[in-house]
Amino acid sequence: MSRRNIDMLNGSLFKNVIAYTIPIILTGILQLLFNAADLVIVGRFCGSISVAAVGATTSIINLIVNLFIGLSVGAGVVVAQSIGAGDNKKTHRTIHTAIPTALLGGIILTVIGIGLSETFLKWMDTPEDVLPLSTLYMEIYFAGIIFMMLYNFCASILRAAGDTKSPLIFLTIAGIINVVLNVIFVTAFDLNVAGVALATTISQAVSAILVLLTLAKRNDSCKLYLSKIRVYKDELFEIIKVGLPAGIQGSLFSISNVIIQSSINSFGSVVMSGNAAALNIEGFVYTILNAFHQTTLNFTGQNVGANQYKRAKKVFLMCLGCVFVIGISISTLVYLFGPQLLSIYITDSPEAIECGLVRMSCLFIPFCLLGLMDVSGGGLRGMGVSFIPMVISIIGVCGLRIGWIYTIFQLPQFHTPEWLYHSYTVSWAVTFTAQTIAYFVIYNRKKRSVTK
Figure 1 (cartoon, rainbow, N blue to C red):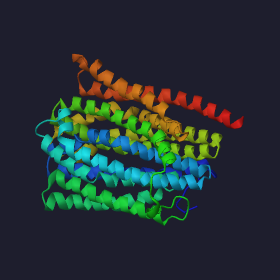
Figure 2: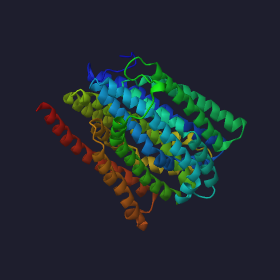
Figure 3: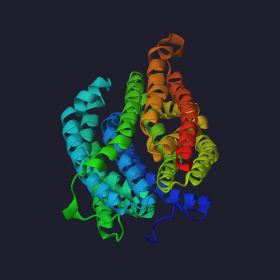
Figure 4: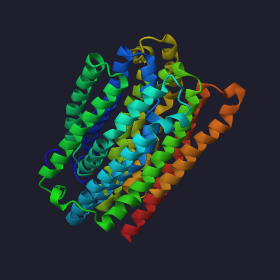
C-alpha cells in the first residue's frame, strides 16, 4: 500500500476517517478558491457587475457539467469495491475505461458549452448589463473543460484507493498558479472576466497533468498505462450504472438551481451580486460537509466489497455525527462574520452586501441538513445503489423546489428572496429523512444476503 493511502478496511475507524477526510476538505477549499479568486479580483478591479457576471454562470455550468461528473463518482465506487474485494483485474480495467470516458465527456461539454453559452444565459433571464461578460466567461471556461473532467475522474480513482493527499498537493500548486495569473491577466492586461476564466483553465490543465502522472507512477493495481487505455464493456456498464443516476441527480439539482437563479435574476443585478458573493462563501462551508460524503462513499465501497457491513454502518453513523456537529459550529461562526466576509467580495455596493446577508440569514444555521443529506446519499451509492437516491432527490429536492417556486413563491406576500431561499432548507430535510430510511432498509437487506 502506498504511504499516502489510508487503510479503509482495518485499524482505528475514527482516526482513519479523519485522516482521509481532512485532505478532501482542504482540496475542496482550494477548488473553491479558483472561483473565489475570480470573484474577489473582478470585484476589486472591475466592479459588482463583473461579480454578477461570474456568479450568473455558476448554476448553468453545474447543470451542464454535473451529468458527466456523476460518471466520475461511478468510476470511484467501482474501483473502491473492486479494491475491497481484492479484484486487481477489475480495478485495472475500470481505471483504463474511466480515462477515455473522461476525455469523451470533455469533448462533448466543450461543444455544448461554447456553442450554447449565450442561449442558456438568455433562458435564465440574465440582465442585459451582465449578459456579454457572462457569455465570454462561460465560453472560455468550457474551452478548457476537458482538463476538469480528467482531473475529477483521476482524483476520484485516487480517493477510492485511499489517497486523498495527492489531489490536495496538486490543487495547491494549481491554486497558486490560478491566483497569480488572475492578478496578471486582470490588472496588467485588463482582460476582466476573460482573464479569470483563462487563469482557471490553465490551472486546471496543470492539475490534470499532475494527477495523470501520479496514476502512471503507481506500483499497484491502480497504475495507469497509457498504452492500455481502452473501453471495457462490463466496467463501463458498472460505471454508468452507478454514475449515470448520480449525474442525472446532479443535473436535476442544477435545473432547480437554474430556476432559482432565474428567479434571483428577476430582482436585478444588486441582488444577483449579493447572492453570488454569499453563495461563494456558502461553498466553503459546503465543501467541509461534502468531504464526509466522499468519505462515506469510498469507505462504504471498500468495506461492502470486502463484506464488512458492520464497519460500513459505523462509517455511516460516524460521518453523520461529524457533519451535524461541524455543520452547526462552522455555519454559526460564518454567519456571525457575514458582513466582513461579504465585503471581501463586494467593495462598491452596500446594498449588494445587504442582499448577501439575506441569503446567509436564511440558509447558514440549518446548513448542516445539506451535509446530512449528502452523507445519506453517499452511504447508498457506496453500497452500489444509485437509482434510489436519484429518485428520492428528484422528488425531495428538484420537485419540491420547483413546486415551491411555482406555488408559494408566486404569492405576492411570499415573492421575496427570503422565501425563495427557504425552499432549500425544506428540501434538504425531506430528502435526508427519506434517504436515511432507504439506507437502513437496503443495508439490512444486503447484510442478510451475505450472512445466509
